[in-house]
Structures are given as structure tokens and as C-alpha cells.
Amino acid sequence: MIALLDYGAGNLTSVRKALSACGAEYFTPSGPSELDGAAGIVIPGVGHFGATSAIGAGWRDAVGDAVSRGTPLLGICLGMQFLFEGSEEAPDAPGLGLLEGRCVRIRGAVKVPHVGWNDLTITRPSRLLDGLPAQPQVYFTHSYAAPLTTAAAATTEYGSTFATVVECDNVFGVQFHPEKSSSAGLQILRSFVAITRLPDSPITRFPDSPIPRC
Image (cartoon, rainbow, N blue to C red):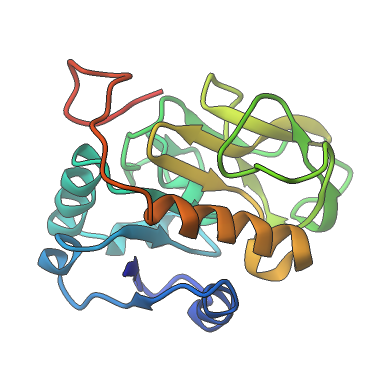
């Protein structure tokens, strides 16, 4: 069963509906210890990066422990930015640090926030993007974006080019809203649900680190 975190910064109703449409079973944990038996974790979110401060130390430790055990983790929009070390939107609010780098305000765009449909350019093989065309259309609403690092599996251009899908072992993130992105978004969620149903396997890419990091 997938754990869907509620920290007061996400449209959980839409995410729940999309997960249901994908045939997923999910629950909203009331405490960090409930992540122990989860088959996967989803961290949604919209709005200011400072809202992630509501995810306290107990939750952060529980998420990190789950990731180190190999539990698949998906961050959506603000939830994806939370996977990184932090954001210039709220410099004092640390991210999870599962992915290297910090999120920055979108540069060079005529209008910010970036709201509406835009292309994904898939830049490398990705389990999350399996079965999608080279440039699917998805729905965005954000003012800050993730850096281009080795974790990037897809990018989008809006003023500048930034990472819009990240994948590092069992850590996944999407800057857009798959729950609002029609068939392409549902396909991405189906892929994540399928990943959560795979047999457990050890993390091999970063054997000297308790948590995978790109």
C-alpha cells in the first residue's frame, strides 16, 4: 500500500483520484512509524517551499529510513523540489537532500509562475517514463525549478531549461502535476505504482551511503 503524505501543502483529493484510477491502494499515515510497511511513498505539494518545514524531523528520518531500505519515493511538484538540498525560495528550510543541488527561481521567462501545458523532453531511459512518447505534454504550475544534474531524466524549456523528471535508484520526482496531466500523467503514475509492486531488491548504486544520492 502506498503512503500519501499530508503536510497541508498538497491537493490530496486530485492525487487520490488519480491513484485510484491507476488501481493503487493508498493511505494517509498519521505518524512516521506508519511508513515502515509502506510499499511506496508519495510526497505531493503546491506553493511555497517553506511549507515543507511542516515535515518535521521524525517524518524526515522515517522517509530517509524507508528510502535506504529500497522503498520507492515519488515527489510531485513541491514534493519533487523537497527531494533536493533546498531552495532559494526558502533558504532556511532544508530539503531531504536525497538529490544534490538547490532549486532556483525560473530564469529568463516572460511570465512567472509557469502555468499550463508544456513539453517534456526525455533525456535518458527512465522507468517512470517508460512507454511515453519522446515529448509528452504535461501540466505545470510553479515558479521555482530543479537544477540539471545526473538525476534528470527529462527536461522542459520555459525561459531556461530545467529538470522536470528526476530518477535516482528508488527516488523519483516530477515537477508537473501528473494527476492533472491527462493520459501521460496517468501513465507516469501507473509506472510508479508498478515499481512499488516489484520484489524488494538491494540498492547497489551507492553501496557506501545509507541513502541513495545523485
